[in-house]
Image (cartoon, rainbow, N blue to C red; front, top):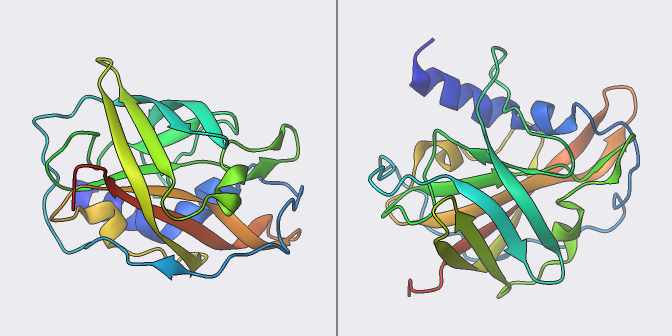
Length: 199
């Protein structure tokens, strides 16, 4: 299958990968913030690859400090999100420091086996929060959260996986009500960030 089709498949089925191990803690189903802020431009642009040093750690003061590992789409097209204690970086997308494109990082909200997931705190992250993404060469890139959006399961914007004309960050997890029969949450939460040097 062509890479472009795999990217599209991941966009449509990310929630399946996220929900596969989310077996029912339902930690935050009643606490949902409203959408806020202006989403950074997601128009088409091929990710800039000359600075493609993979991220290895994500730090959000008071909320997240976790290792980051590369992930891709499985044979079913779903994004293969790592264990609930790690953050997954969509390796086909942009890397920290790229001149354009979306640095997409996904993580679980919870797990029946492990309890709270690495991205459970995203519910409480306010606009304006600062995020630091450390690359494998030790370079630290800082972003500021500028928007929060909730999308129905299976309806994540395709531009998250296609690139963007300017660099941006997207943090993705599950939220909303939990269906025990399908073992899925109803929605995805996306926090959008821009480099702190970007106006």
